[in-house]
Length: 498
Image (cartoon, rainbow, N blue to C red; front, side, top):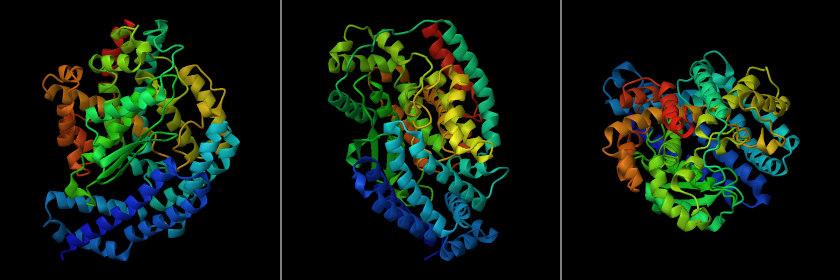
C-alpha cells in the first residue's frame, strides 16, 4: 500500500466516525427523548474524542510528513495534492488541542443545546446564560491551541471559511452594510406595503404545508431515496454520504415553511451532489460554509422568491390553501418579498437579512476581543437591533435566544450566511448567463438544468478548490458585494418604485 493509500484509508475511518456523530446529533435535535440528554452527551463526547485521536494520530502525522516532502509531493497529481493540502490543514488545526478539551466541548454542547431549547421556549435568557459563558470560555481556549493570524476570532472563522479572518470579513462587511443601509432607507421611505393583507388573519393548515414542502423538495431535485424530511426547533441539514437529512419547522400563521424548506433542500442537494466515489475522501466535503449557504440561499431566494417561481408556485398555493385564491399572483409575489424590519433572522427579507448577520458578527467579535461579556449580549442585542432596524425585541426568544448556534459553540459561523448571499448572487448571475432560458424553465417548474449546472460546476468538486479560487473559476471575478447589491436593486426597484 502506498503512503497516499494510507491517507485515504485514514480519511475513510475519520468519515465513518464523523457520520456516527452526525447521526446521533440529528437524533438529538429531532426525536431523542428529553431524559436522554445526559447519556447522549457522554456518547457523543467519547466519539468526538475518538475522532480527535484519529485525526491527530502519529500514524496520520507520519503519512502527511511523507506526502508533504517536496520530492514526494511533486509526484502527485493535482487532485492528490489538493487532498494532502486539506488533510494537512485538518490535522494542523486539531493537533495541539488536548483530548479532554474535545470531550468536554462535545459534552457541554449537548447540554447547552437542550438548555437553549428550554430557554427559548420560556424566553428565559438567564437559564441559558451559564451555558453561553461556558461555550465562550471553551472556544477561547480552542482558539489559543489552534493559533491565529491576528486575534482569537480568526481561528474560529477559519473553521467555516478557510483563509478568512475577522479583518477580511470586516473589509467585505463594512461597504456591504453601508450600501444595504442606504437601500433599506430608500425602500422604507416609500412607506408602502407591497402585497398588503395577503397573509393577514389567515391560517394555513400545517399538514398541508408539510405535503407541499415535500413535493417542492422533490421537484427541485432533493432525493428522498437518500434522505428524509423531519421537524426541528431550528431547521438544519445533516449530510452523511448517501444519507442526507433535512428538517423544517411550521406555523399555521404563514407559509414561511416553504422557503425554509427550499433553503434546507439547497443544502441537501449540495451534499447529495458530492460524487459517491468521494465518500470518505479528503476532498469529499463542502468548500466552506459560505459556499454551502450560497446553495441554500440560491434555492430559497434567487429561485424560490423569484417572479418566475411564483408563476410556477401560484396554482399549487391556491389549490393547497384556497384562502389565498382571492389574491392575484402578483400580490402574493410582492407579499413574500416585502421589506420590513423584523426580529427573526430566518424570517428576514433579502434586503435586511445580511444586517442581521452583521449584528451577530459584531457581538461575537466583541466577546472574543473581551470587549463584551456574555451576560451583556442581551442588552447589546437590543441596542444593535435599534441601530440597524429601528425596532427593539421585548422578548429574548425574539432576540438573543433565537439562534441555535451559540448553544453548539458555533462561533464564527454567522458570517457564512452573509458571505453565502454574496457568493449566491455572483454564482447565480453566471448560471443565468450560461443556462438557456433559465427564467422560462423556472416558470414552467423545470429545475433539472439548474441543479445539473450546480452539480457540475460546484458540487462534484467537493473541496478541491478553496472558496476564493472557486469563485474566480466560476465567475471570472473575486467575491464582491456589488453583485448582491445590483441583484437587490434590480429586484426590489420595481416592487418599491425606486
